Image (cartoon, rainbow, N blue to C red):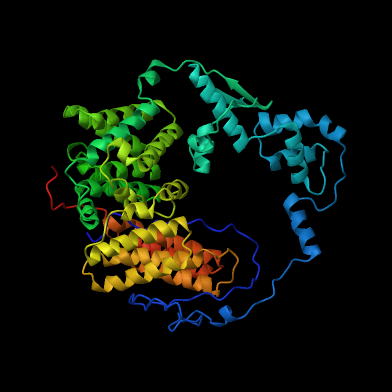
Length: 582
């Protein structure tokens, strides 16, 4: 194995699509590009001028960086044509008075709210019945919906009010649900979509009265089976209690050097088991079921180590996997297996009770409720105060690298960006000093991942750290691919941050970003490493970048390369561990 346990996050916020306009670009500092054999770029000194790179990819035109082009603006006729295509009307409809709108209110309400039809479908039906709005139909309908209170979505203000009402009723021992226009509101779904928890919206004071279209009701009693399952708060407390116990476990003492702690968990069979199950979930998601089955089988062979040889690293890694996973069957089976194994060997303590509680919870609650529970447990663990909770100093900072494990491009980045924003680089380095060159590289890689993610890969420090990492890899005999992966990924996202879909494919930003991402993809092309499986996910990201620039030929070629790489994953494979399972 040639990987450290923490790795670059493969996700960045993509720019919002916009019409293809030719825009003027400022010249950017362009580092010396690496050669095809991965020679790292040199760090530019502060005195360097903004000149073209000493070595430029053959396809990169230098003229793009040195000329400003006047933006092309649409003419009024073009704008009128766009509006017409959006509304689907090639003529100007008549204006309607408020009285006419009111005469159709009941029918529109029935279609839009009661039958839950999309707005465009409602507009089409009303047109068939002789009711045509203005030339900007969508705008007029939405304006009327605001006046009538026809809303399907939750606003932040409404969610804050509902949470306040819920807390007040909880204090009186009353269970609470909310309804909008007769339909139950899923507040947890809103919080998940926004990537926040209810504590982010907590506001003091008494709740305002609910709007007319919102109702507060007391749901019917839960079934005895649900009542017997562990509550969310008690399970969160179990997670923290378990983390405290595991943090003092001699498996990986806090006074170990960071490089030692990382290496110990990187070579642990439990880490391999969770990685294999994660690979299996990803392969199932992209349709490679036979290969996914082999990976899943390998992971479950060693999953019992979460019971017999647990660690705080393994606990967080397990929670992170459940935030990623697509396959609900695998998720349920993991908790069921751990609960059953704990009961079989008569394991006792917070960890065994945690497995039993979560296994019951996921079988008696909606999946969204379960997902929110796991996310809040993970978040609380990263926010815990070590001094007051009895954790060894530096415990949480040493967990940071786990939330930067490489993930497939398809995985949702929102929750992870929120967790990664919790990481404090100063907390990681507080009271520590790198002792050897390898440890310095780990610190630099961690800083690059944390600062890069939190600052959207912008700033001179990103370039400095990436160049320094590439330079250090020349002296290492192991883990070279992993550090190159981090550095090249950072450089690719640095130049991609300002790119907007529709920018010309010969722009310097596009050429530099795809150049570095090509180098990342070469690390996994033509071979399969189960510990670096997600490197292949960057092929899909590279394909997307080519398509955003309108380069369909390169995009199609990249997709073929990605498929060919997936075929290298063996259909018969068994992981061999060099350490005993217990």
